[in-house]
Image (cartoon, rainbow, N blue to C red; front, side, top):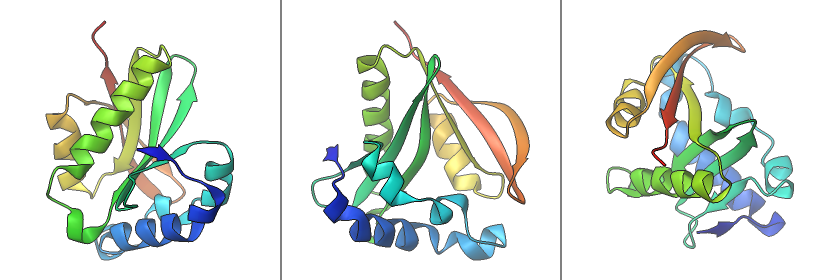
Length: 144
């Protein structure tokens, strides 16, 4: 894993587009990660990519928690454990930053993603509307 560089912007945007395009029909609109400003995320040092640029995780430190803003895996690599590895990396980063918990949100219609996060120890903390979408808020407390 490494931090994305400005020269990675097009590849990052393509990865996010390819990973989230299948969800457009399910959600009924473009998922929020497809609307993000990856130039700004990269400039802020928030985008962590695999060396092969086949997966990424966007991490945003907050007060007492690390926000997993986005996890994306290239479609031909999905279902092979890369998403789980990216989430494990997020936990390592939270620990490195001294943050005791992680949080994330995902669309209520992304049942497979919700099930994955639950299997990783995340619990639902609520639901809310975000930009015309319905989101499940989830959190994982890290063990010391």
